[in-house]
Image (tube, rainbow, N blue to C red):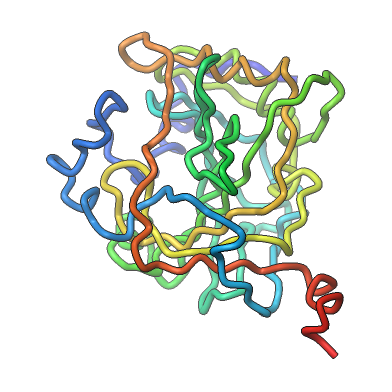
Length: 293
């Protein structure tokens, strides 16, 4: 069940999460640095990730705290002209989901979720993994709790953790993940710039991860992929790829920006430089390889 939202001040305020500057477009992203100097930095995202070139690390898994507890209210989608985004409310326990563990030194509380996509002739993921650009990339943005808000957090290199989930289109109608399908069902209501809709189905944040293996991921230090391109992000890209039905994918292609042009919100691949990409594999893999006795 879903319905559009019109004119609600509360819902509009819910989306004031200044993770990106408003005055930019994807016409010439290679020139963003002219207006946003950090976009010309040397730790920018997205990058190419290659399993053979990554560094395997034996570390504890990530902890996804409150991820599988239902949220206390419905999520409210908005087309901000660059993406479709929604803030994550507290769970029914009164706490917001958060992550810790892995290579992280701190605790990171979820802020919002948004998507990147392409067109009928162009794949839409921002990161390229093992030579593949996928159809959609979902970002779940978390703020380091030692910073009071996202404005402050983006000034520090440990300000954010972004979980990235990649999607590949499949020739099937029978692809169902409760949280994700609740989002897909509402995309038709946010085609127009600045339009909003409420996904009435109550969900957990974890339901957006489908059946992904949360213990198998790549991680590296980079930036926001939109201006101001702050180099304040620890990226976690899951190795598993989720399917998206061929009937759901085109819903992204119909979403319009403020000029009534269809949105293709992919930043070009950035220079990786000397940064290392670490790969955390499930413990069973390490046991099989004899790394654990």
